[in-house]
Length: 485
Ligand SMILES: Cc1cc2nc3c(=O)[nH]c(=O)nc-3n(C[C@H](O)[C@H](O)[C@H](O)COP(=O)(O)OP(=O)(O)OC[C@H]3O[C@@H](n4cnc5c(N)ncnc54)[C@H](O)[C@@H]3O)c2cc1C
Image 1: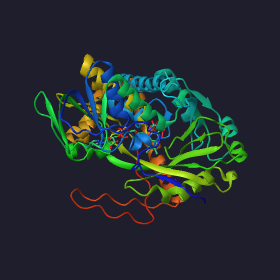
Image 2: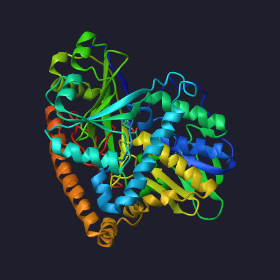
Image 3: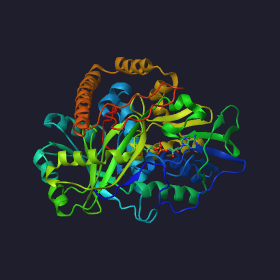
Image 4: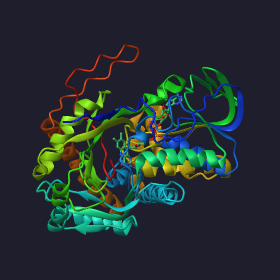
């Protein structure tokens, strides 16, 4: 194998064409945003467009973590499968949340144009494939997505799937013609440029070390400056740390590893003709063809940071497990990013107390959901749009720490619903639970085949982390359901 480029997220992205500015003077603004990932940058851009003075404080640099290391697949939906969403909050609210997730995807589409972000390379269509023969489930899923959730979808029979992906690992598929993919790294830097253009100021190498959210004007301390703001938006994902440790501890950090091969020539076209993104229904593999004849693939996950270079062989093995006809594949780049998973599988979006907002926990479905969150929060602050309250049932889990309150909420809805609707929910839920058990077993098997082991456990708070073992990790329980990476 020739030299592999490794990206851990710790080094600046060469694609970032701006000079970094650090906050070294005290500042007063309307809105301070902590974190220059997709979530923070979207809030900043939208709030600045609506006329607010905005400062973004980023501890490292724009797109340092997951946002600068994603695969660029934009699909509707959330990590939580629709069936479970319905079981928790009922049919009507689920539909509204689903519609918001589609609005998020449309926001990305409207932003990711060649005019606004040159080189963004948007292409259409994504395919979710089933790892098992499940034609009956496919039909009910298509009905639910198409009829109940107004999402354009096509059912692909096994033959059609296998004509495009020449492997016997996959069976039926759900094709999303309105889903799309973009150059993910260009998007986050393009978004930062658009936020600046709208008037937001972005300060990098500026970690927020403490926050005093009391009072009308809230205070933020950074190593070399202080800042006052009427609103603070916490968009730091798992790295938020000291300023609100209790909040970051509500997220399970999951490191996801991805790689791009060297050019594979004709053998790639012989194995894969589908040009959009492919995800499997168990959320194990996510891949697509890039630059004509390279394969970009995300698969293993760990719950502790590991040097991504260690995963190059495992990812190459995984590619060959699914597409043996590829023969030996040479990995040219491997990278990782950490996503934040919530207990309930839904993002954390909303107001913690007056003027203190949170936008995090986007899991592997970050492109559409961060866009949605950014718009919702900016519009709530500046226009009084209250739709973020649809996420309130999910807030309860992390704010009160009481999972039971969510269950109680769902049961309450259940009781109030008609028996017909309750029966429908029950069937969705039963299916979702069965699918989740199967998915977990498959994820464990996929990691076993890829040669990964059980993840090192997170150390208890206050104790120094153990050094990662030389041959690490294995499956993190992800609870992801619909779509993306
Ligand atoms: C390999 C991989 C592939 C993926 N592929 C896809 C995909 O194809 N489609 C999709 O929809 N999603 C995908 N995702 C998920 C998506 O990348 C994430 O959900 C999304 O980027 C999360 O954005 P964020 O802004 O919440 O967090 P982050 O990207 O983590 O940004 C948070 C920022 O806050 C900063 N910060 C934290 N604390 C502080 C502090 N105290 N002071 C100052 N700054 C702070 C951090 O430095 C960081 O830059 C993928 C993720 C990975 C890892």
